[in-house]
Length: 311
Image (tube, rainbow, N blue to C red; front, top):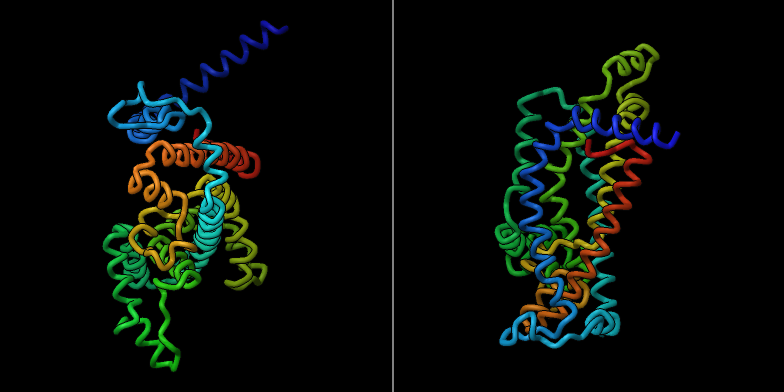
């Protein structure tokens, strides 16, 4: 019986691979790029986390220190604050990136004037294609306390000028809000596609039953896009330790470092700027390991609740 079951499983695997080999072939370039630019640097730097790396001695002859850098990570004075900042900023970003694109997609779906709809889509997609170097400069000018457009508007309303980029609490708020500005349009594409895939006969049936647009949205559209929302939410777990390196590096300064420093900027500052290469590598390796575990959990959750799998 075991042999028969084994043969049956083998046949099922062969049939599955025969059906999906074109999809695996399409995945190959992305896999090669990921291996070269994502995994190879991690594997090459892996020994550095367990040695006291000294450039003039090289990898092989630098002193072996075992887990000392990881122990030091948990006793380093700023480690807890950096981890808290990362989690707080990431959770706020994930929460807003899940809700606002859905709301925008629902509203845009109700627009019937195609020219206006396409114009709005183009305008909200544009920031996604701009780097944080450019957007950081624009934000610095807009939020400047000396003549910045935002503070001028607040002054018109009788509000005192706000140091958005020099006050820790306002800095976190600015980071989350500017991230929404950059990404909510592009993130809404997947939800617009999901809305377009809802069976039109369900809307016709709801309309016959007397449901207006609001009730059709509640009882047809939202349940229709719920599986995609579950997948996106589950996969977002893998980014819970990514606070947005490019964004924060271009916007933060010593005045907001206590509340704006995240793991990635901490690694850059301590590892590269201060020359503690091994300690910086250990911190980065710790983050990668946690991120990998979270991605595996997210994939399992997505498969369990939304039947999502790559193929």
